[in-house]
Image 1: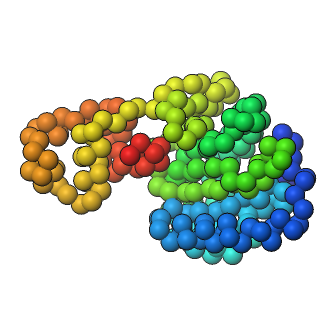
Image 2: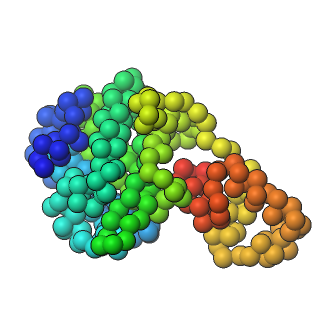
Image 3: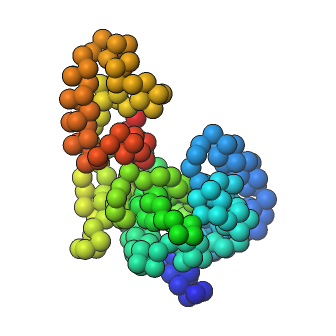
Length: 252
């Protein structure tokens, strides 16, 4: 099992220049992350690529898969082997390697703001849940290697695992990894117009379509037509999936 875990820590991101004293300076960072977790339903954890473990996990990991945050931290990447279906474990190893190689090929002055996201199942007893996973580079070394990464897990709008996307904050151009051809393909995220944003925002706030129509002065038929077009644009089947998609890809 140890050899499998080591595959998550590839030579392209070998970290060896962090003195132990730097860990003593991380307390304010972890306190900020802890404060963030109190205002989100997402599971949050931090990967340490020097010590090859997890530095932090939020309490709500227990809701997702029935383990405590202490167990999550102790487990580290063993989590992927114990709580992810075996059929998807190789996918996680491949996308991890592809993501680091993509990052390593970027000029050092262009690496800031990149994150990688993907979907996979997490098991809790007999229950299997599709989750959306985001990994953002939190702290890098002087050599441009990733020391710490901030990861979040939340409900996914997808019906299938994969959907591997590398994106830069504030940029609609993304790179999607193809698991069949094993290459990155450039494309653009869909653009959400003002009416579509209003529909999604108001529905998230608990309003009905009829109430949105009355409040915004837009006919119900127009709103329904906009919602249908939005579903087609996002390739989703219902409003819950549309909201999850837009939140996951920061379109709202």
